Amino acid sequence: MIIIYQYAIRNRKRLSAKELKSYILKNDLIPLILDSVGCEDIVFKQIHNVYKDNYYQCSNRDGDNPTAIVVYTNPYINVTNYTRNWGRNPDIITLVQRTLKISFSKAIDYLHEILGLKDKTKEEILKDVDTNIFDDEDDNSINEESEEKLQAEFEKKYQKELANDMLIFNGAEQILFLDWYKEGIMPWTRKKFDIRYSYRHKRIIIPIKNYKNGDIIAISSRTTINMCEELGIPKYIITKYYNKSNNLYGLWENEQSIRKAGYVVVYEAEKSVLKRDSLNDSTGVALQGHFISDEQVRILTDYLDNVDVIIAMDKDVSLNEVRFICEKFYNQKNVYYIIDRCGLLGEKDSPADTSNKNFIYLMDNKVKYDEAEHKQFEKDMNINRCGD
Image 1 (cartoon, rainbow, N blue to C red):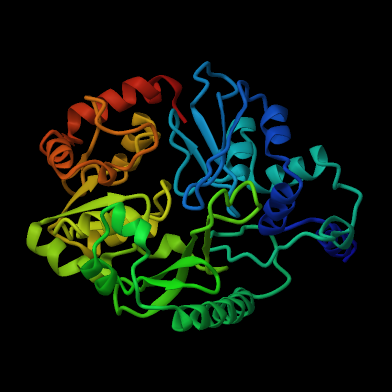
Image 2 (cartoon, helix red, strand yellow):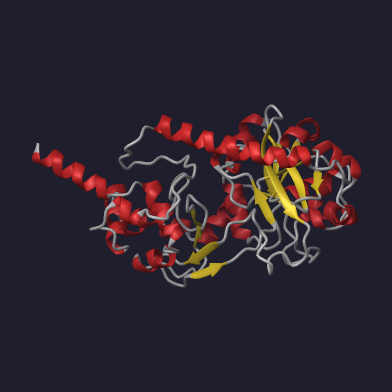
């Protein structure tokens, strides 16, 4: 009985994995954690694009590759380790576990210790911290509320945000913003994807549809105000609590064309899908970021059966990051990637940003991710040498 009482007292102070990650993000503690476990060459990369998460790069504790680890500053604090196999959807807690070779529970205790949370109550720690972010990961710590209750609370908040965004969408004009026309997005594409413009909010309104049934599940919008960042205006806004990892933008609209072509081109942002559609190429979908989730992989492998996958990330995404995405499909289906070896793209361009002639060239010279590519990736990333 004494042991049970002590255990209960301990868990009133101990944060769950979800709460801990929210606290880490709120207080910008990722570099402290990386430093504490012995990672070196820690560098912060700020990406001025809502569809790309900012991230930290660093080396492993026992390695010398300064770009081996990427830690994303999204709510889940996803981690990619290009030199080690850390399992499915590793996060900052996984990084602590694997680096220090300790259990999940010990990793939670370790983080409480180094962050100075050991002797504080949850109420003190979580003051002014928003923990109401959907977490579709397994949380092995003890939760006071059931998973069903948490899911219901999330769904309620998500539906409220979506309803508010739908008011903006329904009040927007069914017209094409002139600058987008100048960039090559055509009226028929605007109509097909139901892109609108809000004079009141000065934003291009982009509905995001469920890939299976076409229901609008989120609203993305882009400001048309110049110097928006200097004025503190977010360039992109997307429906709060929308879980982009469970969907692929453009698949609902382009599915028939994709199946007919026998391949799907995977971009980062919606705009790439729209630009290619305007050139009568309806084979694109967008991750809405350059991190691919296991669910998105499942959609591309199982739902789009008998369809090859072509990865077309922006120019500033490293080759190893692209190969890491390809690894998700290796031995499951044909996967290719586009690489710009001739300088056809600008530093941050998508392959869809170039001319149709250049795009066709890039597609004709795409790289098949075969056994040789797989072995080269292992060699470059020292997977065989470093182990788990």
